[in-house]
Every structure is written in C-alpha cells, then in structure tokens.
Amino acid sequence: MPLLDVKDLKAGYGPVNVLDGMHLHVDQGEFVVMLGANGAGKTTTMRAISGLIPRHGSIVFEGHDIHKASADSIVRSGIAQVPQGRGTFPELSVEDNLLAGAYVRHGGDGVHDDMDKWFAVFPRLAERRAQRAGSLSGGEQQMLAIARALMSRPKLLLCDEPSLGLAPLITQELFAVLERLNRDEGLSVLLVEQNANLAMHIANRVYLLETGQIVASGSAEELGADDAIRKAYLGF
Amino acid sequence: MKSLATIREGGAANWAFRIAATVVVFALVLYVPTKTGAGTIQTAIEALVLMGAAMSLNLLLGYTGQISIGHSAFLGMGAYTTGILVSRYGWSPWYTFPVAFVLSFALGVIVSFPASRIKGVYLALVTLALALVFPQVVTWKKLSWLTGGGSGLPTKDAQVADTGFNIGAASRGQMQYFEIFGWNPLGDLRKPDNKAAFWYWIAVGVVVIIYLVCRGLVKSRVGRSMVAIRDNETAAAVMGVNLVATKAFVFGISAGLCALPGCVTAIKTGGVSPEGIQSLTVRGAITFLIVMVVGGAGSLWGPIIGAAVYVYVTDITGGWASDEAIPGVLRPFFGWAKIPPSDGIFAVLLIVLMFVAPRGLVGVWRQYSPRIVRVLPRPAGTTGAAPVAIAATITNTHSEGEHE
Image (tube, rainbow over all chains, first blue to last red; front, side):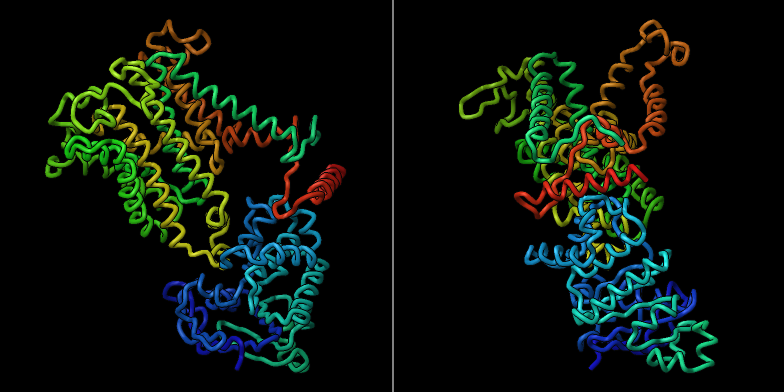
C-alpha cells in the first residue's frame, strides 16, 4: 500500500478547476519529483494535499482518506509542507520559527532535541539561532523552512519549488540535504520543481504534469531515455 | 554598527537596567495619586483606560495582524455591562468585571467568524460597521428598558452617580471607605481627591491584569502561532495552526480584555451613554488604533507608552484655550482655530511620527538603543557555559557583517 495515494483529484480556485482528475502516489521511503511548467498545477497539487484549498477526489494517507480533513489535522497525521517562496516567519527568531514548526506537538517532549538535531544538519542556522528569520539570506531561509517543516516529525515532506530564486550552488546543497534525509532518515518526499536537471538526479520516480494532469511517469532514466518527452518537457 | 557597550542578557548589567526601569514605573504609578490633585488623577485614569484598550487591540492587530476598527464596541460592552448590572440589578461593580469579560469575549468570537474569511481593508470595514452600529443599538428606543436609551444609565437613581456606581457597597448609598483587612489606605472616598485615587487604583489593576495576560499569551505557543498568522498565513496553516480557531480565540480574548477598561470608565463616569463616553463611539476605536501605532504595534510596552504620550499631548494642548496660551512658535499655525488646538497638533505630530518612527516609539528605541548598549540575546534551551560560546559566535557574525 502506498504511503500517499491520490486518485481523481480535482481542485482549483473558485469555479475553475486547475487539477482535473489527477492520480499520483508516493511509496514509503520514496523520493518523488513532479515536474511541470508554470501554471501546470504543481503548487495547486501541494495545496490540495495539505488541505489549504477545497478539493474533490480521494487522497489516502496511511490508509485514511484525508480529502475532507482540515489543514491542521493533516499536519497532525504526518504531512508537512514547505510552502513556495520564503515561507518563514520573518519577525520570529530562527529558534522561534522552529518552535512554531513543532506547533502540533503538544508538550515539550524532545522538541529541543529535535531542534539540536536540525541545527547539526543545518549548521548555518545554528549560528543564527537568535536572529530574526527575516535577516537571513534566501538560501538560509529556505533551509529554515525545511527544518521547520521537519520539526513536526512528518512521515511525508512536501516541498514546493525549493530552488525558487536560489543560486545553483545553494540549490545543489539544498537537494543534497533532502537526499540525505530521504536516504538516512527514511523520510518520504514529494518535491515539485521546474528545475528538471537537478531534481531528476535524486528522484526515485518522476511525474510530468501538464495543465492539471499527469502526462508521463517513470524513473528518471526511463523519462530521460524517451526522446519525445525529453525534448518536450525536460529541455535537454 | 558600533555600540558604546555590550552587555549579556541575564547578566548583572541587564538586571540592573531592568530593576531601574521597574523602579521608575513604580515611582510614576505611585506619584500620580499621592502627589497630584483630582484633575491630574482623572487624566491619568483616561490614559490607563486607553492603555488597556490599546493593549487588547494590540493582541489582535499588532500580534495577529487582524485589523479592527470596532474595539470601541467591546469597550462599550464593558461599560454597559457594569452600568446595567449595577444600576438596574443592584450588583456590586466588582462582580461586573468577569461578566463583562465573558460577554465581550462571546461578541468577539461571533465577530471573528466573518472576520476569519476576510482580510485587510474588508475586515476594517466590517469591524468599522460594528463600531458604528453599537451606539445605535444601545440608544435604540426599544432597548431603553435595558440601556436607558439616548439618555443612558443610570436613569432611576441619581444618587448612585455620585460615587460612581457606589463601589463595593452591598446596599445603596455612598460608600465611604475602602478597606483591606481593616486597613483604610485612601481615606474618606467622598473627598474628590480620594475618590479619584480609588478609581485610579482600579484602573491600574485592570491595566496590570491586561498586561500580564498579553505577556503570558505572547510568549507562549499560542503567541508564536499568532505571529505566524500575521507573518505568513499559508505557512502557519501548513504548520498545523488552525486559522479559524486561533483567530476566534484571539478576537475573543482581545474583545474580552477591551471590556475591562470599559467597566472602569463606567465606574469613573457614574453613568453610561455614547454621548457621555466618547470611547464608545467610532472615535474611540480610532483613538485606540492611533495610540497603538504611535507607541509601537506588536510590542508589549508600545500601547502603554503610546497612550501616555497621547493623553499627555492632548491634555496639555487642550488647555490652550486662547491664542495667548499657545506658545509663540505654534501660534501662527493654530491660533486661527479659536478652539484648543489639541486635535490639530496631535494630527501634525502623528504625520511626523509616521515618517520618523513608522514602527512606533518602541521601534525607535529598538533601532537606536543598540548604538549605546547592545544586549546579546540568550538562546532558549541552553544553560551554563553555552550562552557565552554562542554569544561569541553571534558577535563574530556581527563583526563579519560589518566588514562586508
């Protein structure tokens, strides 16, 4: 049974459905990348899974249908999202951002241990732990957003275009961390990207999204080997 | 940025500063009722009422980012609750405080439900409607059996008005002494100075309670979720913050706390009507907003400082009744008005402040005080020698930043 199984998902804003019956699944411990151009529905998919927008269809997480659940109960059930852009709280300190990430964990059990753990993974955040998050650089903020999402001890991490507005070197560093989390911690990841090259390297499986539907899926090698797909969607 | 001195949070110098600040605040609070007359004390009570209202608004707007131009209605809930329960049902005013809190909390939660679906200027308009409707409702003829209609409360017992709802006494008639375990600190309450001092201490108590609630809330897990909602609603939602419930709770607490200074106003005035108490009208709501912004939104001391400055400035300039009373420099600008120029002068001051101190007076303090003394923060969750090491890291990163 997949960890996350999405079937016939329809979602959008107002009367317009951006997603029109999409299917996807993420297995336990898998690193899945979803590629698509602007407006393909990547962010909408993330928002629909996280419960931020109204949606129809079935979203089954660990055997429970969560398509009607509220955003906070979805976080509680073990799905954390790193929102698009600099999703940090600029007026809170780095530490308080992380504590906010542990919001759904009642009581202080292990919260500070987790914080130290993520400070070890992201040493630059440790140096700036008392600073305002708004004073960090773009890459540091993105790392903070990921660390903050991890503070809720998720089973599935949703990453919405973490490379947006970051220098290629920083993006590489970021993806290396995500790969390590997936490999060492067994964290399942669903990541959406426009940056096909980098993301495909670390993916177990890739989905191609176009105008609200999955048009192709498979391993990175399979998709990369298909000339038509490569030219049309991957751009290399 | 160079600073003259660097001290560590929690260190001896830091504590010395904290103790000094506490002593100054205590001295000011004690000075007013013991060394000044009834007039100054009354003005101080106005300032305290404004502090309470602005602090409760600050929870909602400063910390959670939800605007309200309707807090005058919550203050009014407090004033009318006290007025009705005391003058119609013979309650002791002390017991009306918790009732006012609960009723206003409920009204706040009700208002929060439409409010949690709308944002910014639309929310401003909805809450503005609340401020405009409130005086209409309480002066409505069909409700005059309860609220006293246009003439307000109290309507049947003129004697009650004399000591302000005849505080603390079980039976009607004037209460003469306020005693704690047989100790009578204030003397005969029928003397105007003592009476004013008595109300003053009630107002101080209310402000202290509101401050403690705000402080406890802001530094808690709920406080972090409030700031999270203000800074980034989407991110707050994917952290698991229940937006609707949190906003409803903050609206409720903010409204409930705002009712408490309303009770004080009712007690002090000895009668309640929108004409008698301007804070019950939309003018009050806007004043709370101004006071909060001038002092510094999103800081605990901002509304307190803002209210003190606002009342001080409007009180002094309000006394300039004739052109001759206006100081020479300002006379050409405000002399023509033929009325005390307090509103005009404060308006000009407000515009200047918004340029000089867009984050309020507390913002100015935060920006410029590090040039004199920098306080190194102590990270949470570390004890013993660790803070020193981390403080050193922070200083290093700061000095690196300077070279860039």
